[in-house]
Length: 209
Length: 209
DNA sequence: CTGATCAGCTAACACTTGTACGCTGAATTC
DNA sequence: GAATTCAGCGTACAAGTGTTAGCTGATCAG
Image 1 (cartoon, rainbow over the protein chains, first blue to last red):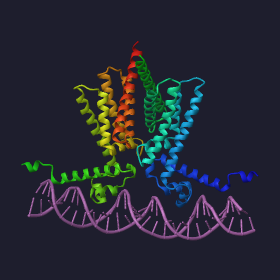
Image 2 (image 1 turned 120 degrees about the vertical axis):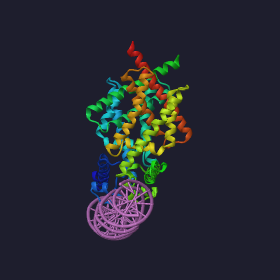
Image 3 (image 1 turned 45 degrees about the vertical axis):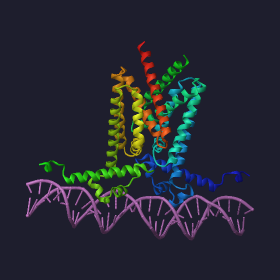
Image 4 (image 1 turned 135 degrees about the horizontal axis):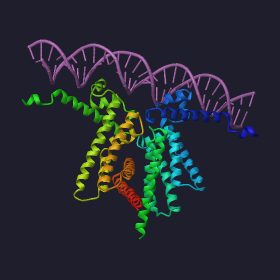
């Protein structure tokens, strides 16, 4: 029967308030307070449940935070992968990727800020989680540089590590900035990434000869 | 008389407990908690004074935090300036600067973490303060690239901005890392900065022709 | 239909937090 | 020597914190 295959009204409701908790946390994040000074009670209040009901969904606030980090990295990577597919119809991969990235930062400032902030803060577990996300980006970039551009492993690694550092750091510059300034930052970042690419190209030539 | 010229026993004592407060804050920072979830009471306790006496020295915790940021930037810049003087007796400016920087991060992990973390967190005032520190570094680097290396203003700016991003980002990589790994990171950072320099050099040549 | 499950609730706990108020005694000024 | 300043203290308070324990009622499985 159709009914027996459905997810179940209970599980459905549970997932719904779980999302409510996640959204509440993101809202409170977009304010001035960092994640570390976020209170279980306030998050629960904004989600519309009793404080004690929080524990039905997460063991503690940290578990919620790690969930946020994971989700942020996931959606960002999906976005970039979609962007790269659009490139096949022509266009600079550097430009499209960076513009997509900057758009994401503009749309999801709160959660991106969490990512950058927890990279250097709180528990080791948080830092590891963020570092893992950065590694994902780096890995995809390495693959591109090696397979499509023909760089050797060492140079591809060095290069992509530098690029990830530059791009994410530029993302942090976008926080207190209006739209036109963000475009300027994007433009500058594109030029900087090209600087790195040109340097790597020159290095490769020097090694070959 | 010598006595009348001395700073005064009272002012001296006040400065002493002020330092105690600053040190206490740094200690608590080196633990897992970020600055935002640092309590006035605990800092006062570790400094050995009553909670209410805190207000004799700072209007609130934020004022203490900004003091920390300022001090961190100041000592780091002094360190790098000293390092650059040592270079006149030969040696790569890139290598010496980065090795000095990494040593600073190793010695002052707690306070450097504050710098990186507040860059993306808390109040706008904090972010501005940190950004100001980064601008200082960038400015000194621009000056060097223009005057000593003969880059034009635009290329010097683009280049030094990228370098500052890479180096500070590498600093963040040093947090959960032992000594040998830190040396590896330093080495990698040196290579990356050289990549940027080489790219800028290539760009300059292309423009001239 | 019956019994088990479990998301969400209320009440209550033992703390910690920032800050206001007024006092004290030593250092300073005149 | 007398008057003033002021770093540091103790007390107190209203708010907010995380977490425990136990109840309720809708949803589920058999």
